[in-house]
Image 1 (cartoon, rainbow, N blue to C red):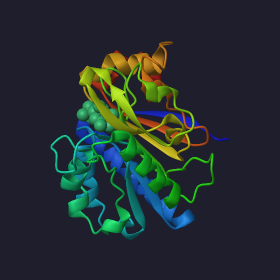
Image 2: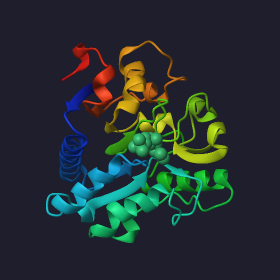
Image 3: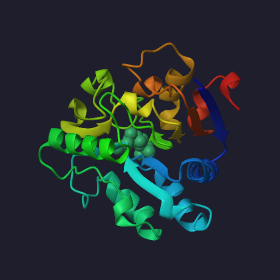
Image 4: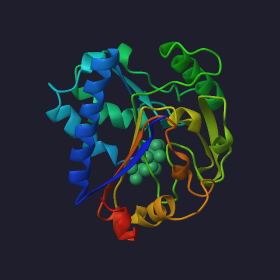
Length: 252
Ligand code: 6PG
């Protein structure tokens, strides 16, 4: 079991995105060299936008797009055309700009009014793609995650039922504060990854980042704390603003 945690502090959001893009390219080339394909789960929210733009612009030659397979860590319970859709954000900033075959893009079918059915469908998609036996979890080559100011990640929000899920790969998680379901990968899937990369930028994230990295607060309260790959790398890409609440010992 090899697990490592790395915290990389970058001066600006732009530097953060550039460093993260390098890591994505590294992971992609390693995965393709070792296993012939690169399975990546994208994050939602706004932080990944700049990373996507960099990948689309600068990595055309250095990323094996024809061997890359795109998934999502979570999705809002909306159609793919909705401004809130994580798929739509990725399509606008990345997928529409790179030579990727539609068959390599596995969108969460969140247009289904029945969120649980959408989650179940996505779980079957993962089971098929990764050729899983019952009880097995998919091992993504790379999972990109963000973190909210409340310490949530993917759609694993503080105090929500999904935090307790130990067997399903994907669940519909009721988020009371938004009065909506979100569809999300579960912690066993996040923690089965070869590499998990957090992208955390901005002063609004500083208190939660301190709680996650430097306090004994519970994972129930700060779900990002529960992401610890059992046999893989965990890399936090944070900018100075998000790191402003950390004691210097954690800064690399
Ligand atoms: C989502 C994301 C969520 C996001 C964080 C941070 O669907 O919104 O999966 O977990 O990563 O909320 O979002 P920002 O990058 O916009 O700060």
